Amino acid sequence: MATNHLADNICCFVIILLITQVLCEEETTQDMIKKICLHTYVEEEYVFCCRTFNEHLISTRTGIRGLTQITIDRSLHNATSTRNLVLGLLKNATGRGSLKDALVQCNSSYMTLIKAFKLASSYFTRAEYEKVIEAESPGPLAQDKCAWRLDGAMKSGSMDQLVESNREMRILVSMSLVTANYLLYP
Figure (cartoon, rainbow, N blue to C red):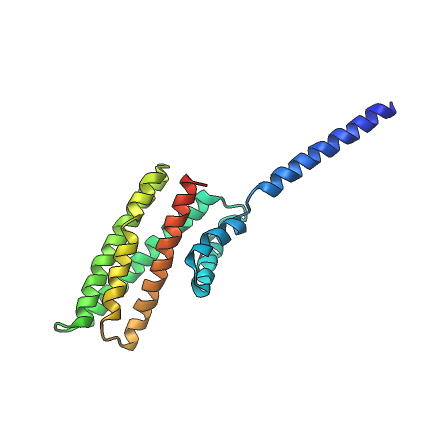
């Protein structure tokens, strides 16, 4: 009788140990966020990355698929909002000049970004993760073209919001590509 009780206790102990080990080995959502955001390199961008994920988490146990969905959704939202801002600034830009040229380039860049993230979202929904990466891949160049033209343009106070939105877009594009790659290569 005592032997059965001892065997039951040992069996329970082993089961608890195995479950604990499995749970400890599982990467937490915050660990994944930290790993993704470390790819931003600059502290201010790291903070933006972590904040973006944490503000849009559906659950504290969100996996890489959920994090990827957040990056696609936020990238599309930012691209759409930024393009609307560019269109508003273009209405007030008169004549030719470096500012208007920069805004025309940014409009084109953000049309490319919107198209890319709509396509990425479509592929993501169908679990075609390699195609998600392909769809997102024009993002860095499109964002950089806008940034490059803005750097060369005369900026007024009204441009600060556009510069900030474009900086955030660069981070979001990076986050999207990193998370999509983790989907394929964990």
